[in-house]
Amino acid sequence: MGATGTGCWGRDLVHSKRRLARAVVVLGAALVVTAANAADLPVKAPPQMAPVANWTQFYVGAGLGFDFASGRSNLAPVGGGPSLFSFDGLQGADLGLSAFAGFDFQVAPRFVVGGFVDYDWSRQRTTLSVGGNAFGQIATATTPSLDQGWTIGGRAGFLATPDILLYGLAGYSQMRINNWSGTYTIVGGPSFTAQESAQTSHGYTVGAGVEYRLANNWSLRGEYRYVDLGHNTTVDPLGPIWTNDLAEHVIRIGAAYRFGQFGGPATTAAAAPAINPAWTGVYVGAGIGGDAVTPHVAASVPGALDFNAAGLGGADVGGTFTIGYDRQIAPKWVVGAFGLIDVATNGGASVTATGAGAGGTVTSDLASVKWAWTVGGRVGYLVSPETMVYVLGGYTGSTARSITYSFFGFQSTSPEREYHGATFGGGFERFFSDRISARAEYRMTHVETRDDLTDTLFTNISAGGTIHTLRGSLVYHLPTP
Image (cartoon, rainbow, N blue to C red; front, side, top):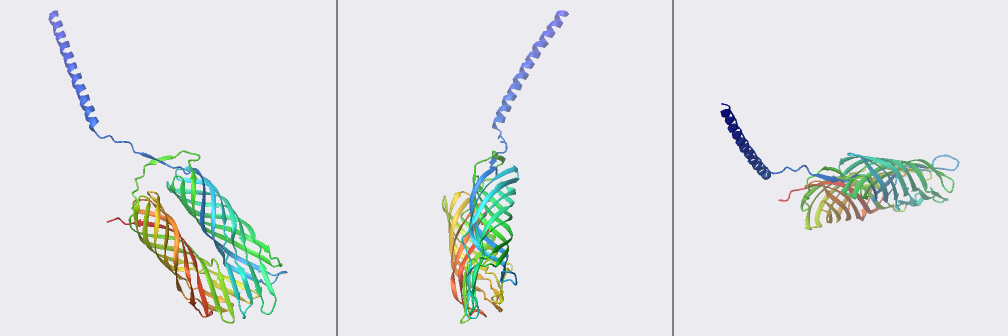
């Protein structure tokens, strides 16, 4: 019995080993099949991460724009008494250049802080000449304008996207202003010359702007600044005292070169979808900006009065609506044609001048654009598949806003007239998506002189000049059929 039990146990052990061997074979086969099937399955890659340049960088740059001096100037006689001259409103304007340098620190994924220093200068002056038998004569009078200045300050900004920085700024400024000068001659009497010395003023600066990085090392910015120059007193060489309460309004566009990745490596973010810019096709757009008008005006009342003015005479805030067609004719070149309409307002801005010696007050609206149209073409070069720099040219018709004035007691309103001339300029354009782009543009329009103008006071009037236009626009590119 024991022998039989032992034999059964042995046979069971042999059967168990055989079953285990078969199980191992089956399991191995299953693993091989599973591995083979897995090799045929698609592999889901982890999300791709793309480097996003850090805004922590040094930079240098240059810009172009407008400077407007506004406020009140007053000339008091030696020893006190009624003012000899006072002026309220826009006191001078110029087209200026700037150079700047600074550094930024990206302190958080969405926030940037930094410091800067810049230098501005201009050499443009506005001159006035009034004369005639009925009045004394003011010869070669000039209005205040910026000579040069510097600002040191800081800025703090919010990144609306990794490439678009919206920022505010504050700082301390020093500006040298070329001031009033003029000669007044009383009919049959002596001459009086007033020359306000150039003054160096100090004040605070506040402003805001937007900067857009075209590439890791290049960016473009648009900026507005208000500079409070405070209360200043200067003495005329003949003794009268000038007092000024002035401020500067500065509008600039500029380009900056940013040096590498100072202070920190590039951050990472999910890769943005590739942009396939549609440079060929029809587009429509709208924008906002400003205009500065440089008029040349001559008017007379035969035998009684002559008036001449030259220089920047006014400014406005304007908008633009445009339509055009571009064609990419080579990998790096685009040509196109466009039409646009500019509309503008100066908000009813006016100036008032009072001269005790002249026996009256002069008030006037400022020269400004009411609306204008331009047709023309442009040629662009693609610095990258999404970014183009371009030059433009065209023909413009511009309607000047009517001017109401009171001239030593004589009141009149000049009629609206359309002026025609050639337009030249340039700008840059960058795609944000396949169909939407942004552009910044400067245009200069030189209009012809019209000598067929009259109003109720002056019988002979001629006017012409130059219009400087800055615009920022958003553009939608229609799908190509």
